[in-house]
Image (cartoon, rainbow, N blue to C red; front, side, top):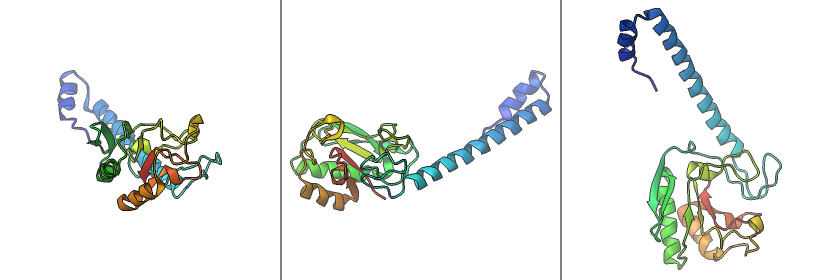
Length: 195
């Protein structure tokens, strides 16, 4: 992001500051901006490479966290939109996946899953890791976390929560999404982008 410094120049001049001091400040600002851009590019490259292709039960840290998805594709907290679930709840998700999540929720509703709660964007790491969750980029939603937590966090529930796997897997194919109910350490509330 380039800054317009023309007003600053006239203010600095009228305040008695020389152009050399302003020029030095401009050089430091330009260097900091370039460094920041390079750091952002490196972080995004690392995020894409670090998470790529990791699936149920494996983790690059060896923590054995089931269901770690694939690479994060969006910048955390950027490119988000709010969609409305069939129950009227507003959910924040990545703009480039909004139609998939909207379609999935509509189809779930039509299939008789009249959920009460949907969670989307939440800037956080995957539990027990230092890797960003797909929720941090708006690339995941959780549907009815309490009844659909499976065996996670002492949930003691069914592997599939209240979902019928054949119905859900058909919807996953239709919308090109992944379902946590298929992971080796199931997380039936979780629906996220693939690839």
